[in-house]
Picture 1 (tube, rainbow, N blue to C red):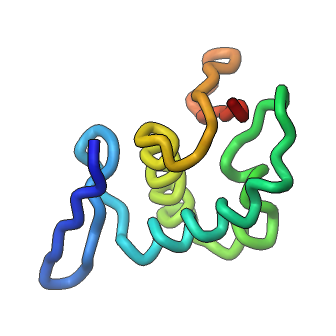
Picture 2: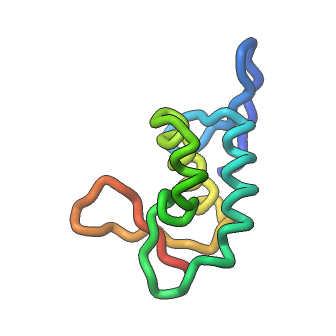
Length: 100
C-alpha cells in the first residue's frame, strides 16, 4: 500500500487504511513528531499513540484530529515507516503498539 495523495478543492489528503483519508498536513506532522518521539520508546512495552505522542502534543489536537492521527500512524506502521507491530489488548478498540 502506498501513500496515495488526493488533491481536492478544499483539502489535500492521503488515503490510509480501509479507504479512510487523513489531511496531508496532519499526516506529515504526526510522522515528524513520531520520528522525534521514537527515541523515548522502550522495547517490550505496550504503547498507545496517545502515550507515545505525549500529553502536550496529544491534548493540542481536538478529538477529530486525534482520530485522524491514529489512522495516520496505523497506516505508517502498516507500510513500514515505523518499526512497530500491532498488539490486540484485552478486546480494547484502542490500538496498542510494540517496538519490533
